[in-house]
Image: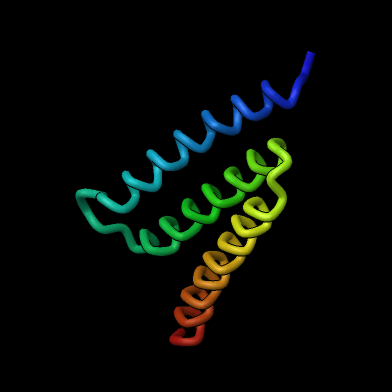
Length: 88
């Protein structure tokens, strides 16, 4: 049976793994061409997972704040992508 507690537990697991992945991206031994964009996308994923967790806990304002943070991070992603495609 699916419950909000189970969903929250799984979201917490995903948050932990996504945060770990973001740290790895930030500390790659050899710099990757898209490392900056990947790092921002991972941070955005953390914000979305955090938002979903907060929504399940009926904490709407912090959840909306997390969604806004995600939106800001994705804006940065698009700015980088647009800047690189404009150079080509």
